[in-house]
Length: 139
Ligand SMILES: [Zn+2]
Image (cartoon, rainbow, N blue to C red; front, side):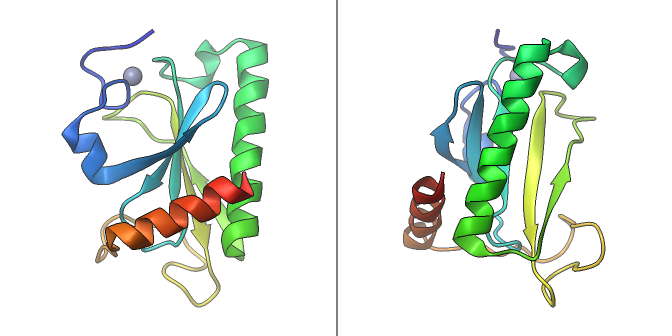
């Protein structure tokens, strides 16, 4: 179920530097991305070590999609973005995970793909906890 060499399977300092756990759903774990350039940006990780949707059963795929919908609805309720962008990459970190990136008209990269190459926006611990509380309340 877990790969000892996997960034997403293992609870490492490197992962904690990038994201903070919000909650666990039935099949997936939800994290708040520490770079909050896009307010409310999260990562939804399939809990077991799978590297592609094609490895999921129909039931797992449906449940994972439901959990994604639940998170998107919660982010919409909590932050009122104008659009949510989704990204599934994994060339270098193949564990199945989805970047969920709220976008705002007039905000960074509105009208184009979000990027990780610009300046980062880090918050205080209290501000992260406030965002996490908002998301948990909306789930
Ligand atoms: Zn993994």
